[in-house]
Every structure is written in structure tokens, then in C-alpha cells.
Length: 445
Image 1 (cartoon, rainbow, N blue to C red):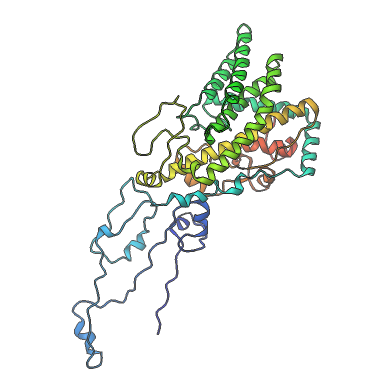
Image 2 (cartoon, rainbow, N blue to C red; image 1 turned 180 degrees about the vertical axis):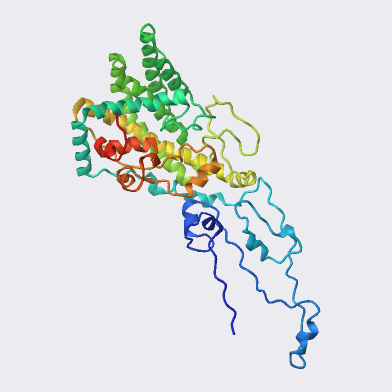
């Protein structure tokens, strides 16, 4: 009778998260889609063994002339069983391994060995996540009509835009400025933007003229500095995003403060350039995602991946290019993925706000505006605010609502308001109207 083929168990990650596993080899579909290490528990060895001392009994039952050969030993030395925290075996699975000693506990710093080239296909780096989907004409028409009828809502959106900038200074982060984004690399343009917001929030009637004068000069300086760059000069995705962030800050202050000079500078210099820089930023991020720089370039980190050297927080130089071997040696897979996601998500959120600043202003000014399109962002609460790479990885094992804004109506049907990210709620209200969001149970006062 032929031996039964043992059934393949679910991979370890799917088992722990109690998700259905496709059991594809060598990597299941779920782990491949999420860019996770995929490993399967070893199959249980056969329980049929010839015991020592029973050779005579065994030979007694065989025909004459049969020569019995001793079965090879199946015990493994402990050092041959490599167990890591990610791929550790369950207790009952360990018990099935014949061994002279129990396997040693894994070292605290151990990490699964994952080729970083395989992580380039992580869910937030795939080419389709960078494609701007055009807004259908009917949807655009309905959105413009709803906004024209809701003038108070437009003014409230202005306050929300201003809050995205002010929260960065007063709280250290906001819906477009991640807490770790400028912790190590802090370009000069963003230092000027931070100083401008701080001065603007702290101005008094006596200091207002000089504060507005300084902000106007910083707008002009930013435009001149960036216009003086040679076209062939290298800029990474982080630098592209930083200058768009800075121009967003100056545009929000200039367009919505009421000062005539600032508004003129914002209309004639900031807005036209913001559209160009925004497109260039998205193109640079898409290229960095495709060639691996966004994943392995350490664009927001200050470590040289093993050199021990650190850059000063005001250093504006490009981050060093890491290698898969150096990252794997330091067990930085979680950190690498987290930092890459922070930059990718920041670029997408930055793109939306850069497009929204001009759109909102033209709606207030002319009653109509052009919709720039749609991108995917992470819409559920907690992912953006995850304090560590490990916490972020655990959240990504569940549904995080990575979807285009025009599909966020599903959140109203499937989620509670408290489960939705604040920034996503802002976009949800802008896309589908305050009335629908208020009927969902969200206060829009």
C-alpha cells in the first residue's frame, strides 16, 4: 500500500493571523502580496521506526537471505535547526522533531532572511499604486455642484488645510507631515517653512507686518533657488517632496491670510510652480519605487546601515545607498519597509494636498476648478501613527484600507467613523460632501 502524502499546512504567518493560506510554494500569495517572509512548518516525520535491539525480531519475519541494514539516525544537532522569532515553530510542531536536545532559543536580534529584491513588489510600491486615475466627468461635475452649494464647507476646508500645517509645528506631526519624516534629513526649504509657520502662529498686531514680509521673501527665495537648479541635477524623491511641502506651506499662508502682497506672490509664483513640482515629485517617486531606491536608499533615515556614522539633522545631503546584504545583516527588514512606506505614503498625501490647495482657492474664487485625479492612500486609523516598525508591520497584516479616494464611500458602509484616519476623513468629506459624512455620525462643525 502506498504511503499517504502529508497535507501541507498553512504558512506560519497565515496561521498566526488566522487567515486563509493559499499554500503556494515557495511563497503563498498573501505573503508575496504583502512583501512578507513566508515559511512553512516542517512536515511531521513518519512515526515508523525500527527500535534498537529489535533487529532480530525484525529479521525473524523476513524471508531467508534478506539482509537488514540499520536505518540511518534521524537525530539532528541543535545547531542545525535555525529558529527565528518570525519563523519559530509551534510547540506541537517542535515536539515532532526527533532530537537529542531541544532546539536553542532564538537570539533577540534574529530576523528572517528575506532577499530585499523580493520586497520591491511590496503592496505600496507596485506600479499601479502610482497611477493617477482620472476623475469621471459626472463625478467631477457633481463634486463641483455640491461645493458651490456649500460655501461654509469650503471655508472649513481652508481651516483644515491650515491645520495640517500648524499641527506640524505645535504637535510635531499632522496628516501630511509624518513624525519621522524630517527627523534626520531636514532640508533648508523645510526649515524655512517650519520657521514661517512658527512666526505666523505667534505674530501679534505689532509684529504682523514684519512676519508677513519675511514669509513673502521666503516664497521668492524658494522659487529662485529651485528655478536655478540645472535640469540634469540629481534630486531624489525625498528632495522633490520636501520642496513641494515647503511650497504648500507658503501657498496656504499666502492664499488664505488676506495680505494683498502675499496673495499676489502665491497666485503668480506658488500656484503655477506647485502644479509642475507636484507632477515631478510623483514621477520621481514612481521611478524610485521601480528601481529600488525608495526601498533601499534609506531616504528618510540617518543610519549608514552598518557604518555607525550618523548625519546631523540639518544635513541636506542625499542619504546613502544601502545594500541588501548590509540590511539583512542588521535585521532591518521591518525598518526598511516602514521607512519606505512612510515616504511613499507621504508623497501620495502631499500630492493630494498640493492639488487641493489650488483647487479649493479656484472654487472660492470662480466657483469651479479642475480635479487633478485620484490616487490610493491608506485610509484606516493607526497605520500613519504607528510608533515603531514592528507595530506598523502588525497593523499591515489586517485591512488598512489602501484604496483610491473615490472608492472611500465603502468606508461609510463597512467601517465606523472612529476607524478612519483623520486625513482620509478630510478627503472623504471633500469627495462626497459634508451631508453624507454628517449622516454617518461625524460632526462637521
